[in-house]
Image (cartoon, rainbow, N blue to C red):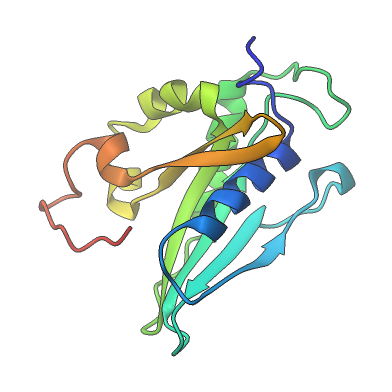
Length: 168
């Protein structure tokens, strides 16, 4: 397995957080909460808020999965099973968008697993409709970073009626 694929859950969370905090041109970018996998904290793994001066913006809620245990050894469980678990966790956390904020839901994995994840969910109507995003985390030298995979990159086309109202 390549180094690009071997990341702990905290590595995946850190890479995705680094990406989101540099994304776009919003005035305020702040991590709201971040789970520490080594401490076995529960709940959403990463919550980041990107907003303008008036407080309008997007809230990103991300569930992360890993390929390495926190002690650096490889996972024994099948990655497909872990990814399916992440899908169920994120779907169970989806709430109705408020009138003031957009909630963007995603799953972060090591970048080397992205193609496998896309293949597993590409034809899923419900996930396409919910516009679940993927984030591929990777190490760039000593820095952790991620790439965002938008719904049209994962599912092809736009949702159920070709609507182009979704935000990035």
